[in-house]
Length: 231
Image: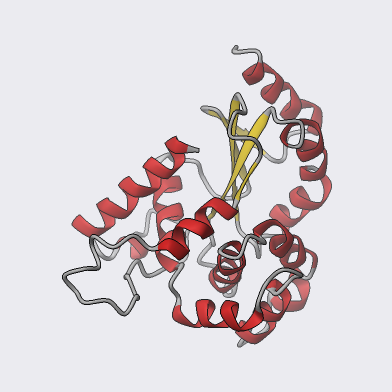
């Protein structure tokens, strides 16, 4: 977990000090996402005042025991059909066998593709639900209803309603999504995945090993078992 947060911090720092047009890089398949700090703070304070909501949203998309021996990252796009299939068909088994048993800690990494018109707004809704501690319930709902919202021309109200799972205050969520406050986090995710050369989603990183989600469940489990054994 700490390694991932450090990488995200480095990504945000690189964006702040480097090319502000990183989202337009033709070498990435990711959507263009702003990295601006939209909080209404005096300009001289923005660089030093921690964004408590972003910290909560970051924690919310992590699942599993802090003491887990293996770190796993799911690089995904909520509008991606293959990502939905993996989340529906494979993820429940991985979660029950490894995550719920305290063996593996998982972080969900957003990588909305530029060809998916509503993927950024879906990630926005998911992270705003994450700030209220309901990330995994929210993405379950968003994946489940993917065909309902994927082709809607103005999906924000629909996405907000879908992400407002039990435990989420809808007014707080709507204020969050309207502000685009979590866009910086989504941009940092994209930057991290591009720098790590992980490829387009869906993709899994188990420790330092890339695993294609098209691999059979048995093959994915073998990689996780190997990492747990320290091999």
